[in-house]
Length: 99
Image (cartoon, rainbow, N blue to C red):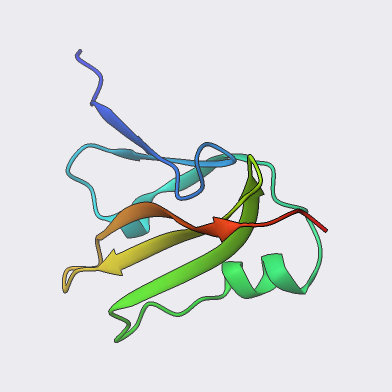
């Protein structure tokens, strides 16, 4: 018996990893790795984001990389069938120093 192919998805560069069967809807995915804190309001908010009628969710982080302020955006865009596509952008803003 042949095993079904799996898809592994990470919305945050590998900190959190989900698994689902190839062709299965995103709602069937299971969490297989998470480095996100087990407690706190931020994790709770992420865990309870609604997808009903939602076009997209975005998380924006501003970080210094090599003395350049950079805007990092992770976005999840949903399709009508409940599936989604994740994307990541990194945009240099300007020189500065980390606080």
